[in-house]
Image (tube, rainbow, N blue to C red; front, side):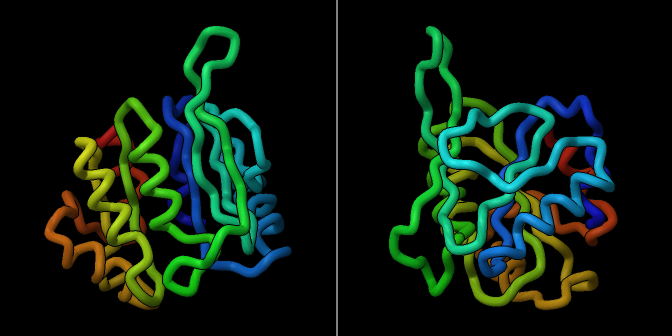
Length: 175
């Protein structure tokens, strides 16, 4: 509720979001964020094209991955949703999404790991960094639970550690 509304409508990037939430809650989260944001925010749908200026939230109980595909002669990224095995006790999993993005995307990526329990996202963050992407972790001072950002920082690959109110600005600087 602080990061997404801080992104401008003309942002030249798509945003993929994995939030550890059960089915049914991610749609209402997307609707709420959409109502307070300049960018379009929606629950991701299988097969849809990933476009700049839009944030796609993984539906509860589905992994969100990306598939690069030629569409009318142009390389595009499409949403792929599946119910493959949980990863680290999670579906959706941040690591599954980040690994997929690192494998399929051909441009600049910025990975943001925010408050949460466990270490989901740490492995995928390294994949993003290995593709010359950038990484941000939320500072402990603004985390409700410092587990996921702590694991990200422990990789030694995080570029910036910033408090929650500064994450949107840092994303824009990195883009």
